[in-house]
Image 1 (cartoon, rainbow, N blue to C red):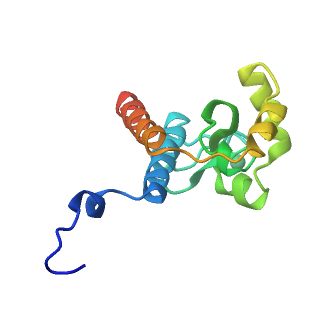
Image 2: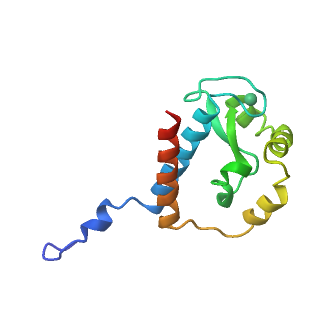
Amino acid sequence: MGSGQCPEPVYIFMISLKGLRKKAWDLQSIYVRRFAKGICFTCDIKKDWLRECDAGHYLHGDALDFELEKNIRCQCKRCNNHLSGNSGIFLSRLIKQIGYDPTDELLEKKHKIRKFTREELEGLVETYKRKITDLA
Ligand SMILES: [Zn+2]
């Protein structure tokens, strides 16, 4: 940056898209784990939601990270990591909860290139901030 040029400070302080995506994910993750009170979706064991639980996916994919209702639930680390998401039980419980099998829909979304826009991510951040506040 030349000394005679006027920088554009708005870009310096603007959070990157990647940072915003992480922020949205982190807030969603907090919401999911707190909402479940640390009870694992796939094995029913209650753990400390903050330290011992994850927001687990039924199916993985960049486009599926914010498919909360159809794809994300609180899981203990054992189910999420060591049992690779325990996806058989995950699916059967998901079907029971939402009333249908979301697999085809999720797979279709997964294979589309999906970039979240800044507006969408900001919207998610606001949504989860509000949801977390409502839980308290
Ligand atoms: Zn578990």
